[in-house]
Amino acid sequence: MKRHTISLFLTLAAFWLLNSGHNTVLMLALGFAAIMLVLVIVHKMDVVDHESQPIYLTRNIFGYYLWLIKAIIEANITVVKHVWLGNKSISPTLKRIKISQKTDVGKVVYANSITLTPGTVAIDLIDDEVLVHALLRKDIESLIAGEMDRRVTLLER
Amino acid sequence: MDVILNFTGALCLFIGCFLCISGGVGLLRFPDFYTRMHAVGVTDTLGAGMILIGLMFYSPDFLIFAKLVMILLLTLLVGPTTSHVLAKAAMRNGLMPALEKGDNSKEINSSN
Image (tube, rainbow over all chains, first blue to last red; front, side, top):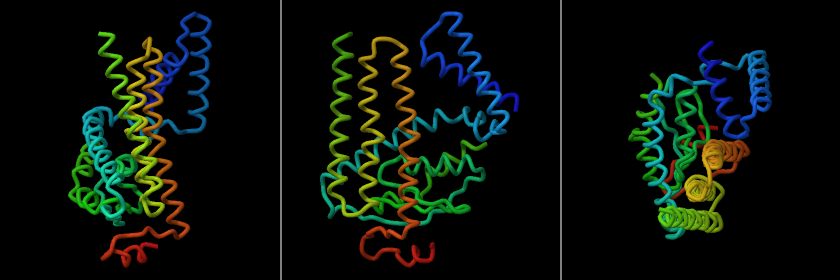
């Protein structure tokens, strides 16, 4: 709880400083007061926890981001290629896929990553299955092969 | 140095524009709602991303650079969320995707 509050404070402070760009004492004090007010409200709402501030993800998340950016670029090239090739070349598919994440945060990260890569959209998430619509059958097959699933599960520990 | 920055920025903007136009063409061209959504996915991931990265090369100071990074992160978070909500709403209201032949429609019917 304490660690989550500190992490939230640092995030808000960085956000305020980068957005305002002011550094007079009065402005900094007002910013500090605003951040404190937000922290008090957020504590009253009882939403400061491992879900709103998933600090435990930070160890491995940057490696995952790099891999995800690579995946997004490849998927973009594929989709743009099929846009210009036309309707004959696509094979829309709908399928349920098993996921191996245990925590809610892990499941959300996985479903969001599926939707973020063009060509696949996560439509529904029920227990340990996600319903995916894909532009190409090949995309579903690579999701079933499960490289993304494995990488997200590695994030969880 | 300035020439290189300008050139790289212009190149990124050009690629971003091409991707956005491709997304628009796909939006008009693809057969049904769900496939059109994939075309829009190109626009709001790499299309917007390349345009924002291109603008970062032109940013005069660190603060503007940081703001562009924040906008990029925001679009990358909001894009998939809205796509998912759209798709889920369409599915809830019984809009069935046009699938290729030899499809898995039996499985879909059991899912609802």
